[in-house]
Image 1 (cartoon, rainbow, N blue to C red):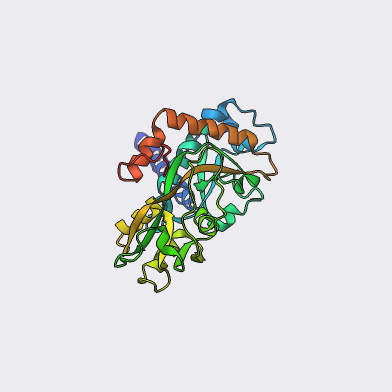
Image 2 (cartoon, rainbow, N blue to C red):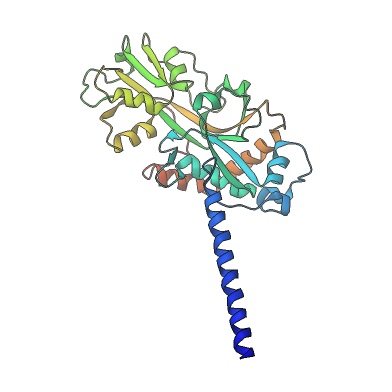
Length: 321
């Protein structure tokens, strides 16, 4: 009887332990998807030895790189309405897209966990982030004006800026046909600057010429909003919309009643951005991520991700119009 009681007692303790472990696992799972919409990926923490770049960083420092290695988290701002670059799937509570995968890989190589933050494009491009996030991985074009606000990595890929019209339109076939027409674009984008004739791309960008004059410009919160208004009908809100070819094609593939017309207007060098006014000094972080971007070019990671998200096309190689 004594052995039986002892055996029963041990069994009871085992059951309690298993239940406790299961509850802890459930708590961790629910905490992982709570605020901020993180990717759920895990990385090492620089504060505890870490891996990747953070394994070599003195986390007692005060700059942005030391701070994030100490925290074990890379805070990444991106707009959740830029499919297929980045979007938040509310049904699965996960981030998806080319930029999301690029950001996740950068965090992994730094040796930290990625934390995606949904931010409006106009807020990101305004600069002076006040330490709300560490980096923008959101297909930001390096322009001369933006270089006043941000430090940029080398381009991690390039996108052709393209024109789109309603599917039944037959009168607009190129930029010369947009004089006097209603042109819709996302606010604070290079497409807005291009139509206004003020676009100045940063160093290393392919050359281009302004081909649109006298357009009637209307801006929206995002490129997707501009395409939504174009899709209402030919000339209803917009005669044409300009965005990245990849964004337009994804909209078409999802059933949007629009089409791409003409050749690309220019090619954008898309880069990862860091706040020049970061109170923690982001230069060392920018240098580290720039090297990671170069490594991802060299080992084929960026090329593979581009082909995965853009129908087999490698947009990581520069092109010109």
